[in-house]
Length: 141
Image 1: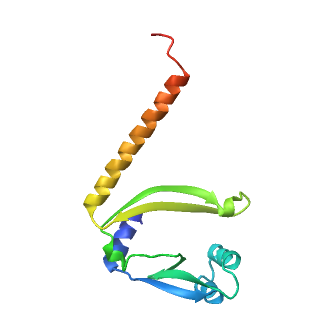
Image 2: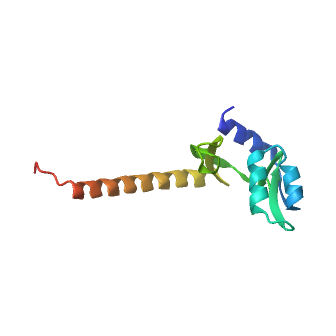
Image 3: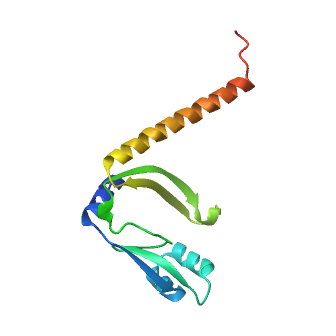
């Protein structure tokens, strides 16, 4: 399935984001079978303390939050980029894919955001060109 189709399906369901404050053992039970989340909990959550997780549908993630009340509040979404990495930055570890995205409560806001991103890219590229030109003066003028 495409990412956009999956997002549309999830937003249509208006899945509730449920904040849960849990013990370390409870968190480990909630993410059982996911070695990456298990390792984060084992190494980052001190014994005898609590942590927050968010549940949305059957997805559970470690997060401080806050989140939207439900997925139906997302009216516009764009997948912005993706990247490959290795777990903990170690090439001997498993390869992972990261997906980045942004959402807005209406399509107009997404359109404005995309226009602003293009302006930033243009300004960044123009700035880089000016720096290069300053470092490499044209000998043909």
